[in-house]
Every structure is written in C-alpha cells, then in structure tokens.
Image (cartoon, rainbow, N blue to C red):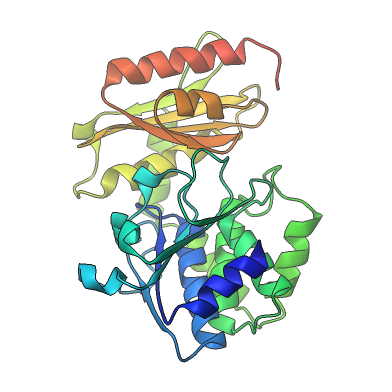
Length: 313
C-alpha cells in the first residue's frame, strides 16, 4: 500500500498532517518526520501541521498551523499514529478532498480513504520510515531525527516485545544520517531532581489488587496546576510500575476535566479488549481509555484483576 500512499501524496499540492491529541513522542515524531520527508522530496508542495501543543516534549519547538476550513478543501489530510477517529487532533480532516492514514495500533475502524495500518510495527515512526525506505525517498537529518525519536519512545528504548529485527534495520537506516544521539536522549530522558523526588513520592502511592495488579489513582485536586497536567501525569506515572517483580499488569488512573484517564500496561497479557470495552484502544500490551468517573475506573480495575487471575495470552 506504500505505492498507493505515495501516489496520493504526489497527486495533491496541499497536504495537512494530523495525529492524535495529547501527543507522545511517536505522534510528534511521525508528524514532524513526515512533514520534513514530504518537504525534502516535494519542495513544490505546501505542507501544514495541525494539532495541540506537545506538552510531554517541551524541547520540541514547533508551531502548529491555525488553518481556516477552506484550507482543507482540495487538500490531502494525512493522519498519523491514531487508531480511533475521536482521538484525531483536528476533525476537519473530513473536509479534505482525500485522506490517508499511517498507523500501528490494532485496527478498530476505517478512518481514511487509504488506511495503511500494520500493528506489527513498534511505532508509527517505524511504519513511516519503512514507507520512506521502500519508496526510495530522500532522507534528511531533521526527518531522520524525528522518526528515530518516535521509534525510541514507543519501543521503550527498544525493550518492548514489539521490537523485532526489522526495528533495528529501520533504526540503522535512520542512523545513516548523523543524528545527535547524546542530545536527543538527554532531551528525552533527563529529569529535574524535583521530578525524581516526586516519582519517589508517587511510588509510595502504588497499591495492589488481589491478583497483583499494580495501580495508582490520582485525584484531580492532587494534580499540578495546568489544563494539560492530566495526560502528562498519567503517561509518566504508569511507567513507575513496569519493573515490579511479580507484577504483570499495571494501570494508572488520573482524574481530569473530561473524566478519568486510564493507562493500561502489561508484559504478559492482552489488555487491549478491556480498554476497548471502556471506549479506548491501542496495543495488546499498552492501551488507554478515558472513563467518566472513579466508579467506572474501579470496575475497569476489577476486569484487569480478573484477567491477571487467568493464564497469560
């Protein structure tokens, strides 16, 4: 389907790139990586990026375009790293003349005219990288750096079991450009000492269900100030539980204005059906959803506990 995707890009002079809201490294990496990839190979085209600010990645300096509805008329909208239509950062992709999606989540619904979806990739950036490689597109340093960033973050620094030989082959392809790994890794993973102390405090909040599902529940009044605090906190806290011996399922709950953000993880079980049951989705071992209240969140926790009592799948 890469040839069909390339044909769509070639056929449109105006291209608008979307991804999921509250972006992580893979969403931003694929968006910026594809932006530079198209600009580098088709300099005559006008390329825009839309979406909310990447608060999880403050070192990424990017200004997203504020477009009128008319800009979508006759354009190609490309959607990246998004498995559900309600999570797309700008729903005006529906106004575009044509739509294209690159995604690595478990397929839930048809979103674009052409859906290039493959859940065997560790990241959307990996999928876009393969697109570039297979189509013989020119790769610049900015494009390679952003695509590599998304591969690193969505693979958990290349440790998740979604990583394959292909992952490293594509990483090597990107490293044909002189990516400054020291600076990239420092920007991604260095923490203020105050944040490290906060992590230590939050570790004391970890609780366990009967079948050893680890979880943290953060009430809205305990969040730092800022409207974007909930998604940042939620994604950060869930990683605190990933290396506890004997814990094979873990979940973080964070209250927000729109409900309770739930980040589900496992290193043994397929937790995706539970996320889907509560209106979310994602991957077999890393999924998320937002539920309306604490009562619903605790029902979800009960489902995870029941899953942890079964044989791993």
